[in-house]
Image (cartoon, rainbow, N blue to C red):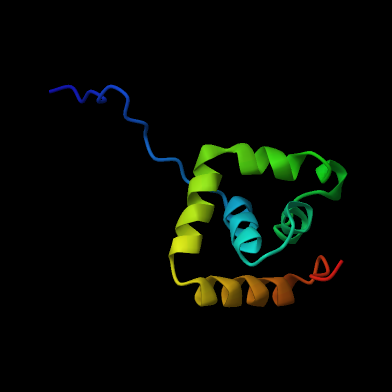
Length: 92
């Protein structure tokens, strides 16, 4: 028996660890460029790439879900992650 996909139904897309961290940093209040760097992406593409990530539907949806979830826990996790990596400053 063959499995067929339903029309109009997309298969779920999974985020990479960097995309997940980027979303958490956005929810924590970092500007896109700082969130991009804090997630471990290269500084070479920091002027355009963060905004490309924000245009991806699966990332936007994940950010919305994070906002809808227990925000204090997400902010705490993002700050802990940042403290572990210390790749960028949280302050401008």
